[in-house]
Image (tube, rainbow, N blue to C red; front, side, top):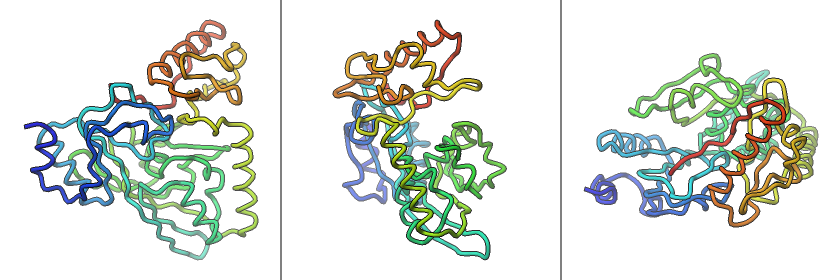
Length: 305
Protein backbone atom coordinates (compact mmCIF):
# COMPACT_ATOMS: atom_id res chain seq x y z
CA UNK A 1 0.00 0.00 0.00
CA UNK A 2 1.42 3.38 -0.94
CA UNK A 3 1.46 6.43 1.34
CA UNK A 4 -1.60 8.06 -0.23
CA UNK A 5 -3.70 4.91 0.26
CA UNK A 6 -2.44 4.58 3.84
CA UNK A 7 -3.42 8.16 4.67
CA UNK A 8 -6.83 7.86 2.98
CA UNK A 9 -7.65 4.61 4.81
CA UNK A 10 -6.41 5.83 8.21
CA UNK A 11 -9.39 8.15 8.92
CA UNK A 12 -7.17 10.90 10.30
CA UNK A 13 -9.24 13.66 11.92
CA UNK A 14 -7.88 16.26 9.50
CA UNK A 15 -9.58 18.52 7.00
CA UNK A 16 -8.66 17.67 3.42
CA UNK A 17 -7.15 21.11 2.75
CA UNK A 18 -4.56 20.41 5.48
CA UNK A 19 -3.16 17.35 3.64
CA UNK A 20 -1.19 18.29 0.53
CA UNK A 21 0.54 15.96 -1.92
CA UNK A 22 3.82 16.72 -3.71
CA UNK A 23 3.77 20.12 -2.04
CA UNK A 24 6.62 22.43 -3.17
CA UNK A 25 8.68 23.23 -0.07
CA UNK A 26 9.81 26.58 -1.44
CA UNK A 27 6.35 27.74 -0.28
CA UNK A 28 7.10 26.72 3.30
CA UNK A 29 10.69 27.85 3.81
CA UNK A 30 12.01 31.39 4.25
CA UNK A 31 14.86 30.45 1.87
CA UNK A 32 12.11 29.88 -0.76
CA UNK A 33 14.03 26.79 -1.84
CA UNK A 34 13.25 23.07 -1.83
CA UNK A 35 11.80 20.18 -3.75
CA UNK A 36 8.35 18.69 -3.05
CA UNK A 37 7.21 17.07 0.18
CA UNK A 38 5.62 13.73 -0.68
CA UNK A 39 2.87 14.36 1.89
CA UNK A 40 2.62 17.71 3.69
CA UNK A 41 0.30 17.92 6.71
CA UNK A 42 -0.64 20.87 8.91
CA UNK A 43 -1.58 19.86 12.46
CA UNK A 44 -3.56 22.17 14.73
CA UNK A 45 -3.88 20.15 17.94
CA UNK A 46 -2.27 17.36 19.99
CA UNK A 47 -4.96 14.81 19.06
CA UNK A 48 -4.11 15.16 15.36
CA UNK A 49 -0.40 15.02 16.16
CA UNK A 50 -0.78 11.79 18.17
CA UNK A 51 -2.80 10.18 15.36
CA UNK A 52 -0.07 10.93 12.84
CA UNK A 53 2.70 9.72 15.17
CA UNK A 54 0.78 6.44 15.64
CA UNK A 55 0.38 6.04 11.86
CA UNK A 56 4.06 6.81 11.27
CA UNK A 57 5.21 4.34 13.94
CA UNK A 58 2.93 1.48 12.79
CA UNK A 59 3.86 1.86 9.12
CA UNK A 60 7.50 2.96 9.44
CA UNK A 61 6.84 6.16 7.48
CA UNK A 62 9.68 8.74 7.40
CA UNK A 63 8.65 11.85 9.37
CA UNK A 64 9.99 15.40 9.17
CA UNK A 65 8.69 18.08 11.55
CA UNK A 66 8.92 21.81 10.80
CA UNK A 67 7.63 25.07 12.26
CA UNK A 68 7.68 28.22 10.16
CA UNK A 69 10.51 26.96 7.91
CA UNK A 70 12.79 29.80 8.97
CA UNK A 71 15.93 27.85 9.88
CA UNK A 72 15.91 25.08 7.29
CA UNK A 73 17.30 24.30 3.87
CA UNK A 74 15.17 21.74 2.03
CA UNK A 75 17.16 19.81 -0.56
CA UNK A 76 16.23 19.91 -4.25
CA UNK A 77 14.73 16.41 -4.50
CA UNK A 78 12.34 17.17 -1.66
CA UNK A 79 11.23 15.14 1.36
CA UNK A 80 10.01 11.52 1.44
CA UNK A 81 7.20 10.42 3.74
CA UNK A 82 5.24 12.89 5.87
CA UNK A 83 6.31 16.46 6.49
CA UNK A 84 4.47 17.85 9.47
CA UNK A 85 3.98 21.58 10.02
CA UNK A 86 3.08 22.32 13.64
CA UNK A 87 0.27 24.90 13.74
CA UNK A 88 -0.80 24.49 17.40
CA UNK A 89 -1.91 28.00 18.35
CA UNK A 90 -2.63 29.39 21.80
CA UNK A 91 -1.75 32.51 23.78
CA UNK A 92 -2.94 32.58 27.38
CA UNK A 93 -1.80 35.33 29.78
CA UNK A 94 -1.89 34.87 33.55
CA UNK A 95 -0.96 37.94 35.62
CA UNK A 96 0.71 37.31 38.98
CA UNK A 97 2.05 39.85 41.47
CA UNK A 98 5.57 40.20 40.09
CA UNK A 99 5.80 37.99 37.01
CA UNK A 100 3.47 37.35 34.09
CA UNK A 101 2.99 33.76 32.94
CA UNK A 102 2.29 33.37 29.21
CA UNK A 103 1.24 29.95 27.87
CA UNK A 104 1.91 29.69 24.14
CA UNK A 105 1.23 27.00 21.53
CA UNK A 106 4.26 25.74 19.61
CA UNK A 107 2.88 27.00 16.28
CA UNK A 108 2.58 30.63 17.39
CA UNK A 109 4.97 32.96 15.59
CA UNK A 110 7.29 34.95 17.83
CA UNK A 111 6.48 38.23 16.06
CA UNK A 112 2.75 37.75 16.70
CA UNK A 113 3.36 36.90 20.38
CA UNK A 114 5.53 40.03 20.75
CA UNK A 115 2.84 42.28 19.21
CA UNK A 116 0.12 40.88 21.51
CA UNK A 117 2.35 41.27 24.59
CA UNK A 118 3.14 44.84 23.56
CA UNK A 119 -0.59 45.67 23.61
CA UNK A 120 -0.90 44.00 27.04
CA UNK A 121 2.15 45.96 28.34
CA UNK A 122 4.18 42.82 29.02
CA UNK A 123 7.97 43.13 28.63
CA UNK A 124 10.82 40.68 28.14
CA UNK A 125 10.49 39.36 24.60
CA UNK A 126 11.51 42.54 22.74
CA UNK A 127 15.02 41.34 21.78
CA UNK A 128 13.55 38.21 20.19
CA UNK A 129 10.62 39.93 18.44
CA UNK A 130 12.31 39.97 15.01
CA UNK A 131 12.98 36.21 14.92
CA UNK A 132 10.82 34.90 12.04
CA UNK A 133 10.16 31.44 13.49
CA UNK A 134 7.59 29.84 15.76
CA UNK A 135 8.01 29.42 19.50
CA UNK A 136 8.41 25.64 19.05
CA UNK A 137 11.25 26.04 16.58
CA UNK A 138 12.87 28.76 18.69
CA UNK A 139 12.85 26.52 21.78
CA UNK A 140 14.19 23.54 19.84
CA UNK A 141 17.27 25.50 18.73
CA UNK A 142 17.40 27.95 21.66
CA UNK A 143 17.15 30.85 19.23
CA UNK A 144 18.60 34.17 20.26
CA UNK A 145 19.14 37.78 19.26
CA UNK A 146 20.65 40.93 20.78
CA UNK A 147 22.24 39.10 23.70
CA UNK A 148 19.09 37.21 24.71
CA UNK A 149 18.12 33.58 24.12
CA UNK A 150 14.72 31.92 24.36
CA UNK A 151 15.95 29.98 27.42
CA UNK A 152 16.05 33.30 29.32
CA UNK A 153 12.24 33.56 29.31
CA UNK A 154 11.15 29.89 29.33
CA UNK A 155 9.76 28.36 32.53
CA UNK A 156 8.62 24.98 31.17
CA UNK A 157 8.15 23.13 27.89
CA UNK A 158 5.44 20.58 27.05
CA UNK A 159 6.37 18.19 24.27
CA UNK A 160 5.68 14.78 22.80
CA UNK A 161 8.07 12.03 21.74
CA UNK A 162 7.80 10.06 18.49
CA UNK A 163 5.99 7.25 20.33
CA UNK A 164 3.20 9.69 21.25
CA UNK A 165 4.10 10.11 24.94
CA UNK A 166 3.61 13.60 26.39
CA UNK A 167 6.34 15.07 28.60
CA UNK A 168 6.79 18.30 30.48
CA UNK A 169 10.27 19.64 31.18
CA UNK A 170 11.15 22.47 33.54
CA UNK A 171 13.70 24.95 32.21
CA UNK A 172 16.56 23.33 34.17
CA UNK A 173 15.75 19.95 32.54
CA UNK A 174 15.83 21.37 29.01
CA UNK A 175 19.63 21.14 28.50
CA UNK A 176 19.67 24.51 26.74
CA UNK A 177 22.98 25.33 25.08
CA UNK A 178 24.01 27.59 22.21
CA UNK A 179 21.56 26.84 19.38
CA UNK A 180 20.41 23.51 20.78
CA UNK A 181 18.30 21.93 23.51
CA UNK A 182 17.00 18.61 24.80
CA UNK A 183 14.20 18.87 22.20
CA UNK A 184 16.69 18.79 19.34
CA UNK A 185 19.15 16.32 20.85
CA UNK A 186 16.55 13.76 21.97
CA UNK A 187 13.95 14.18 19.16
CA UNK A 188 10.92 15.65 20.90
CA UNK A 189 8.22 17.79 19.31
CA UNK A 190 7.27 20.94 21.24
CA UNK A 191 3.51 21.42 21.70
CA UNK A 192 3.37 24.22 24.27
CA UNK A 193 5.57 26.39 26.48
CA UNK A 194 5.22 28.61 29.52
CA UNK A 195 7.13 31.88 29.37
CA UNK A 196 7.83 34.06 32.39
CA UNK A 197 7.82 37.80 31.64
CA UNK A 198 7.17 41.06 33.51
CA UNK A 199 4.79 44.00 33.37
CA UNK A 200 6.23 46.98 31.53
CA UNK A 201 5.35 50.34 30.03
CA UNK A 202 3.95 50.16 26.50
CA UNK A 203 5.98 53.11 25.15
CA UNK A 204 9.26 51.63 26.47
CA UNK A 205 8.49 48.15 25.09
CA UNK A 206 7.60 49.66 21.69
CA UNK A 207 10.74 51.78 21.69
CA UNK A 208 12.92 48.69 22.21
CA UNK A 209 11.05 46.66 19.58
CA UNK A 210 11.37 49.51 17.06
CA UNK A 211 15.06 49.85 17.85
CA UNK A 212 15.69 46.12 17.21
CA UNK A 213 13.57 46.19 14.02
CA UNK A 214 15.59 49.17 12.74
CA UNK A 215 18.85 47.37 13.51
CA UNK A 216 17.62 44.28 11.67
CA UNK A 217 16.56 46.30 8.63
CA UNK A 218 19.89 48.15 8.48
CA UNK A 219 22.25 45.27 9.27
CA UNK A 220 20.57 42.14 7.92
CA UNK A 221 19.56 41.26 4.33
CA UNK A 222 15.84 40.92 5.11
CA UNK A 223 14.98 42.05 1.58
CA UNK A 224 16.20 38.68 0.23
CA UNK A 225 15.04 35.14 1.08
CA UNK A 226 17.34 33.47 3.61
CA UNK A 227 17.18 31.14 6.61
CA UNK A 228 18.56 33.78 8.96
CA UNK A 229 22.13 33.46 10.13
CA UNK A 230 23.68 30.64 8.08
CA UNK A 231 26.62 29.86 10.34
CA UNK A 232 27.03 29.49 14.09
CA UNK A 233 29.34 31.90 15.88
CA UNK A 234 32.61 30.44 17.10
CA UNK A 235 33.72 29.96 20.69
CA UNK A 236 36.39 32.61 20.33
CA UNK A 237 35.50 34.41 17.10
CA UNK A 238 32.70 36.11 15.17
CA UNK A 239 32.10 34.01 12.06
CA UNK A 240 30.77 36.88 9.93
CA UNK A 241 33.96 38.88 10.60
CA UNK A 242 36.19 36.01 9.44
CA UNK A 243 34.07 35.49 6.30
CA UNK A 244 34.40 39.19 5.49
CA UNK A 245 38.15 39.21 6.19
CA UNK A 246 38.51 36.20 3.89
CA UNK A 247 37.18 38.45 1.10
CA UNK A 248 33.98 36.47 0.63
CA UNK A 249 31.38 39.21 1.04
CA UNK A 250 29.28 39.21 -2.14
CA UNK A 251 30.79 35.94 -3.42
CA UNK A 252 28.19 33.86 -5.22
CA UNK A 253 27.56 30.44 -6.71
CA UNK A 254 24.49 30.18 -8.96
CA UNK A 255 21.65 32.07 -7.26
CA UNK A 256 23.27 31.90 -3.80
CA UNK A 257 25.31 34.80 -2.45
CA UNK A 258 27.20 35.72 0.71
CA UNK A 259 25.25 38.84 1.65
CA UNK A 260 26.99 42.16 1.04
CA UNK A 261 25.06 43.55 4.02
CA UNK A 262 25.97 40.83 6.56
CA UNK A 263 28.48 38.14 5.60
CA UNK A 264 27.06 35.69 8.14
CA UNK A 265 24.03 35.28 5.86
CA UNK A 266 23.85 33.32 2.62
CA UNK A 267 20.90 34.65 0.63
CA UNK A 268 18.79 33.47 -2.27
CA UNK A 269 19.40 36.17 -4.88
CA UNK A 270 16.84 34.58 -7.16
CA UNK A 271 16.20 30.99 -8.26
CA UNK A 272 18.97 29.58 -6.06
CA UNK A 273 18.89 25.82 -5.62
CA UNK A 274 19.70 24.02 -2.38
CA UNK A 275 22.79 22.74 -4.16
CA UNK A 276 23.92 26.35 -4.79
CA UNK A 277 23.53 27.13 -1.07
CA UNK A 278 25.42 23.99 0.01
CA UNK A 279 28.26 24.55 -2.46
CA UNK A 280 28.64 28.17 -1.37
CA UNK A 281 28.57 27.21 2.34
CA UNK A 282 31.23 24.55 1.70
CA UNK A 283 33.40 27.05 -0.20
CA UNK A 284 33.07 29.60 2.63
CA UNK A 285 34.00 26.98 5.26
CA UNK A 286 37.07 25.89 3.29
CA UNK A 287 38.31 29.45 2.65
CA UNK A 288 37.86 30.49 6.29
CA UNK A 289 39.68 27.37 7.50
CA UNK A 290 42.51 27.88 5.03
CA UNK A 291 43.03 31.51 6.05
CA UNK A 292 42.36 31.39 9.81
CA UNK A 293 42.44 27.66 10.79
CA UNK A 294 38.98 28.08 12.29
CA UNK A 295 36.20 25.57 11.67
CA UNK A 296 32.79 27.12 11.13
CA UNK A 297 29.53 25.19 11.37
CA UNK A 298 26.14 25.57 9.76
CA UNK A 299 23.39 26.98 11.98
CA UNK A 300 20.67 26.06 9.49
CA UNK A 301 19.29 22.51 9.34
CA UNK A 302 19.51 20.65 6.03
CA UNK A 303 16.52 18.35 5.42
CA UNK A 304 15.29 16.13 2.60
CA UNK A 305 17.29 14.57 -0.19
